Image (tube, rainbow, N blue to C red; front, side, top):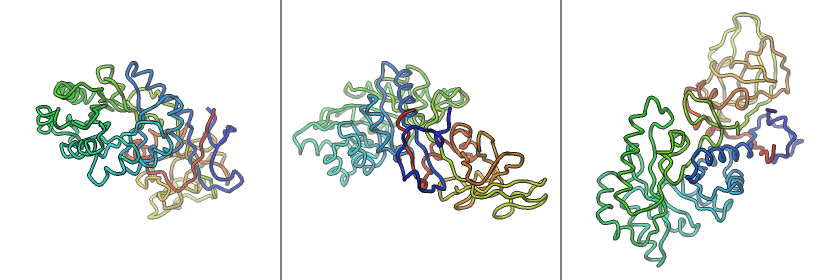
Length: 379
């Protein structure tokens, strides 16, 4: 595949004549293709799209319309302000806000036609009262906890709701009951936990009025049809992450991060590079300095562990990542100032970058900032 930074397809972003020290290229067709993969895998269940954290750092205002054009009609965000912003991009879509319905959020939820995921009896009471005041049944999602122990109705609250559902859900249109798996990304090691949560979710559904159901997100969808129910909610996989540890990644690369090589210099055996001299050359070496650092979201913990690619040639990080710069050992490689160093993309994958930093793909993507974004519309 041709790297996005050298692609001739139309892009949007700063004036192409402006110098850019770094850039993040987002391949919208790849995100759409990944969404279609989820629709195919999950069928006949429907597929929503999770676009929280500004589309996992890649720009929800551009991603959501592309997905809507591909048939996605339901989007999930975390924060109220994310939902308000997204409404402008997809005016006719259903937007679910995972944070729920705190009393001070209700006016904005109503104004922008957002649907809260109700995680407590207090949430349900507040949103139901808003519906009764408006004399209109408000769409609602009920979130039940099946073992994550974060948001969601506790078993005690679920029992109360089950016994009083008609009264407590008055004023609401229960459009979805959802839960979230804790260990879905490693089906082998955590099969028992997945099975327990599946059983608990089925029990919860039997305790509530009939409604569409959703349990699986990116990884859970890959566990099989038992986990699909009526709606799956892919998130990070839409942006290129592998949803299942140790398996072939079916997702296309959606994000390409590059930085300019600002300088290439020779150092002698024993010379150090960067703060605290954590890299010392074991031979005469060539060091390339690249215009990306931890202020751009490159994890400092990846110092001396990660790698970049220049013209398809892989070069390891050499020395500590600093605020604005990182350094590569390019000994024996054909590298010159002005070259593009791919920190994330087709050669250095999202999963490679996450492994080097000892983290996950979610954090790598959502840390990215400062550099301009360019959007590829067609391939």
